[in-house]
Each structure stands twice: as structure tokens, then as C-alpha cells.
Length: 355
View 1 (cartoon, rainbow, N blue to C red):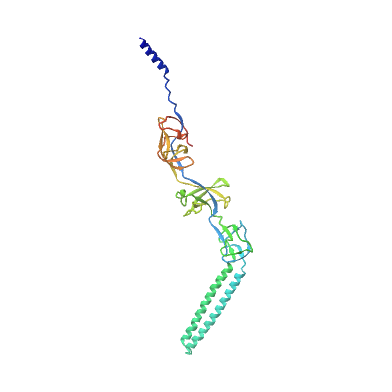
View 2: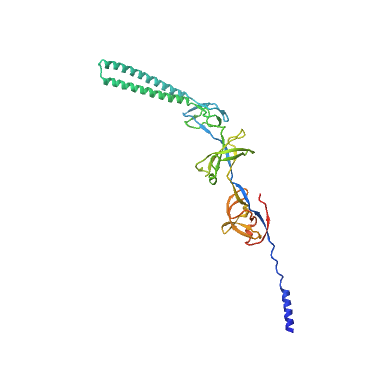
């Protein structure tokens, strides 16, 4: 009896010492988004400089001393208009000397011709041999050749005289002047730059990763930094066949289709090169994490359990990151605190709408 009583008391004491069972922790709140297809445009915005399609760096074709400059920077010029003049005294003297040589050669030719006529008469009368006549006829041909040579040299000298005037080779505006009256210049040295203001374009440098996605004729949107409210239409006119050795980017010229007086040479412009719109699964960049060296996201299933899944990330855009494989539209993906989640962990998803 005593043993039974002792056993009962012991059981009661042990029961009193047992701790109550710990309730399971509540589900952890998790910020999630629903994956859906979003139209992603692979457009590129680049900064460039407004330039003219035609920029002529003009210089003289002869050496000389400048005696007159007839234009200023900003002057509007017409094709054929005289811009700068050289001292043409030496060129004129050369032209005069060349013309004198022509007259001398013509006189010698006339003498040789009359001599041949006399020799022919003597041959007809059998006073001289045919070989003597042949020698005089050869001298006539030589005299004629010298006349042609002298005339050609006179034409060159005449051109040299005309080259003393530097004329505009196109309609446009003067943007640079690098010589003043009194300065002695050399052949080919740039004196005046004339640009065509009727054909305006923007020069931009396109990275290697983007150049394969554009082609000549693609449309573009252009905005000047001076007036970002106004938009201009553009079209790619030229893509450099080789990368710039300094920037390792490709120079691309985008023609302005509807340029107006507001567009000035040298202005800074933003060029948006439109790409092809494709339907991608877009997720916020915060949803991506690295697990075992692989890009992954945490997917929340219909039982609110978190599990990691490997995905393939595509292009980063303003809307987020394009996922090309590993996800399906309609799935829930955690976008905050993903590095602290545990596989199989139950969460309380809080849906956030992607903008």
C-alpha cells in the first residue's frame, strides 16, 4: 500500500515538472510579386554631339602670303564665294612668263614650218636629197611639241594664279578661321572651315555590346539638353565599320529629320536608339540571389512554402531584370530578404504590385 502511494506521488511530481509544449513560430512575413509577362524594350539612350554631315576644311593649293580675308566666323557663304586671298604677284609673273614661252615656241614652230616648205621645193627641183627634208620635218614636229608643252605649262601657271583666291566649295556657314592677313601659309594648310547647315546629324558612340542590335535606317528619338521638352525624329545614317581606337566604341551618325533653327552645331543631344520590343518575365533586381554560384530566386508555392529555384537572368532594364528561363507567369517570387530564407520555410506572403 505504501509502495502504491509512493508511486502515485512520484508520478504526480514528474507531471508537475514537465514544461508545456512550445507552439510553432508564426509564418514569417515575406514581400512577394507575381511574375507576369512585361513588354521589354531594348532601347539604348546615348549622349552625342550635334554636327553637320558635311564639314569642309578648306586650304590653298599653293603657298603664299594672305593679303585679304573676306569672311568672319559665323558668316553665311555661298558656293563659289571668295573667302581669302593670297598675294598673287608671283603667280601672275609665272603666268606671264609661261605665256611668253608659248609665244616663243609658236615663233619657232612658224620658222620650222616655213623652212620645211622651202626644203620641199628644193627636193622637187632635185637640188637636195630627201634625207635633208626629213631632218627639217623632224625639227618641225619638235617645234610643234614644244608649243604644246608651253601651252600646258601656261595653263598650269594660269591655274596657279587663280588658286590665289580661296573660294567656298559649298553653301554653309564659317565655323573656324585659322589664318589672318599677313600670315604665310603652305599648300593644304586648313584656313577656313565651312559646314553645311541643311544636313544636321548627331554623332554618338555605341558600345560593342549594342552595335549588333542596330542597323542603318533604324529610327531614333533625339532630345537636346538645352530643351528636353522638345523631341526630334532621327534615323541612323551611318555605322562605323570599325571601333574607335580610343573609346573602343562604334561611331554612329544619326540624321535629324526635322531639325529646326533651335538645333545648333556643337550642342549636346540625347539619342534614344529604339530596339525590338520582346515579351519577357520581369522581376525586381532584389529578387535575384546567388546560391552555390548560380543565379536563383525564392519561389513561394500555393502552400506558402519558400523554395529556391535556379533561373537564367537576361538584360537589366529600368523595370527590373528579364528572366529568360526558370520561371512561369503567375508564380510568386520573394523580393526582400531573400538571403535569409530557408528551404521549406512557411511564410506569410504580402503581395506588391510591380509598376
